[in-house]
Length: 301
Image (cartoon, rainbow, N blue to C red):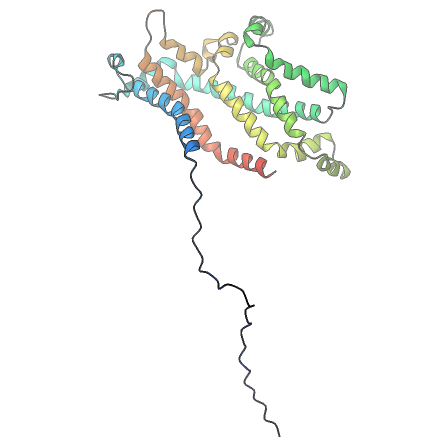
C-alpha cells in the first residue's frame, strides 16, 4: 500500500546555464555630457536680446540729465512718471485699440485667405496656370516696398482705403507671397489619401479643406499667425503712408511725437516703447500653449 502526501514538493529554481557571468548590480546611468561650445553660443546670442532690453528699461526710468552718463548705469531715482507722461502724450488706450483691431483683422484674414489660395495652388501644381501663379506670387518677394509705395498711396486714396480697413487689406495682400511659399511646401507633405477618403464619403472641396486640410495646417497657421502679428503690430512705414486720419494712428505712429526738429525726449520715448511691448508679450504668454502644441504636432507628423 502506497502512501500519497498532499504536501506539494518544493519548486526547484531553474539552473543557470553554465558560463553565464553573475548579474552585476545596476549602475547609475551616466549623465549626457554638456556641449559647452553650444551653450556659450546660445548665451552669447541671448545677450543680443537681453542687453538692449536692459538698456531700454533703465533708460525709461532715468531723468533726462542722467542720460549724459554711462548708458548701462542704474537710475538713481526711478522716474515712474515717465510712463504716465507717455500714456498721456500718445493717448495710449486709443492707439493700442487701433493697433489691436488692425493686427487681429490682418491675422484672421491672412490665415483664412492665404491658406485657401495656397491649397488651390498646391493641389494643382501640375497645371500650367497654377504653376505660373505660384511663381508669380513668389516673385513678389523680390520687389522692395519703396518701389511701389507711391502708387499704393495714390490708389488707396482714390479707392477710399486710406483707413484701417484698407491697411488690413494691404497686410493680407503683401503677406501673400511669403505665406504661399510656406503653405504650399507644407501642403505638399500632406498625403492625398486623406482627401480621397473624405471624397469617397461624399465630401466636397470646401468640406475637405475645412474638415481635413485646415486642421492639419495648425503648425503652419501658428507660424504664419505669429509672423503676421509681429509685422502688423510693429510696422511703421505702411500705416504712415496709408492712414490719413489722426484718430486711426497705431502705436508706432504715435511714438513719433517724442521727436522733433531740435530735441528728442528719450526717457519718455523708451517708456512708451516698453508700453507698446507689453501687449505683445502678454499675447505670447497667453498663446504659448497653442504655439508649442502646434510645433509639437508638426514634429510628430
